[in-house]
Image (cartoon, rainbow, N blue to C red; front, side, top):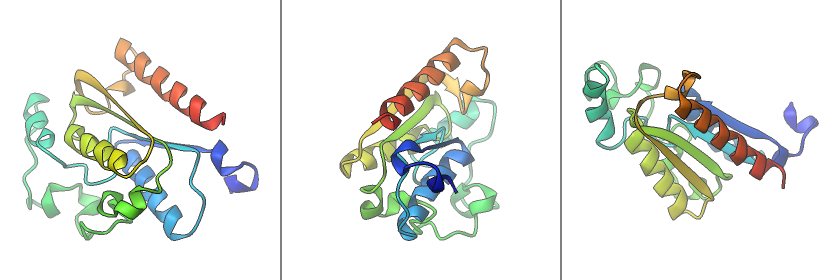
Length: 174
């Protein structure tokens, strides 16, 4: 519907947490359906692969007063319930599994924090994007939990808002 009014390079798409994963899945779906990419995307507090990636998910839970994920305990590989029946190799769900698909991502902003469960997964996503020649930015805040910037009273939240606005302003003005 947006393509009826706007050029693809004028469209930005982003989401946080599950919404960030849906953003990555949307880019994969756009490729499958031969639709144009948006001008830029933000995968915030998430990844282009599993949210449970690297050591961070196992360390940050206890730091935030939550248990570490237990692979196989109710969901496949400790993943979120709504993804428990999904093939973990499916690039439409986890684009990181297809280097060819990753190479077609638009400029991508990744935001995370050192106490967020997705910290390791965001790093893995950034590395995969760089490895495949995609313009990407990774911004990490220290000592803050998952999706910390939802608390708009934090000074760090205002920094995140500025990073997001500048990223999309730079990429959607071209």
